[in-house]
Length: 115
Length: 112
Image 1 (tube, rainbow over the protein chains, first blue to last red):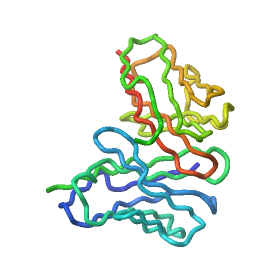
Image 2 (cartoon, rainbow over the protein chains, first blue to last red; image 1 turned 180 degrees about the vertical axis):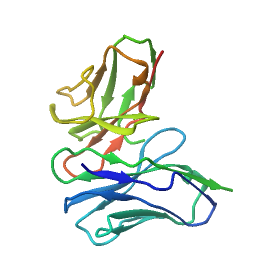
Image 3 (cartoon, rainbow over the protein chains, first blue to last red; image 1 turned 30 degrees about the horizontal axis):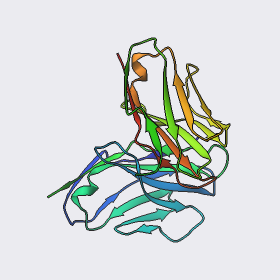
């Protein structure tokens, strides 16, 4: 079974700084999808970014980018020029390319952006 | 706004009761997923439907059941409720295989 591990339960940075959230996963499959979701205090789950394992190029969405290291099974999220609105729980998630199309989530990292 | 709607937003009920949570997917999405978020178990996949048919099951209790209707909305039925069933229940939808899942706002269930 696939597992996702986020080793940083909490992080805190100043506004405008860059922060990197870590995620590792375990799978024997060669193709799969990886995601970062954000859950602000409103509890809404918001998709931040998506990466397909067969693509070498790291995904980027505005201030959010990932560092995908397939051999190391690592998928970190970098937030540049952090803003107060980035304060949230961040979940890394894995989805297989075959079988059940379920998301397997990590335990989450609570990120606080301080003014 | 993800385009996925869930009702009700909050539900408070007593142990032993039965409740129904409702979800409407984004327009055009055929897949619906249910997830449970609790403090001790984190975010867990319960069940997936695709175009009216059950596609995958996760750690869903026998007391729980779900279905997807011809208009693609889905309902999650929770019966013989226990205190431990208190959680945030999310519905998500996607257009199909390998695509990202968009989440609804969730239903917060409190069992007293």
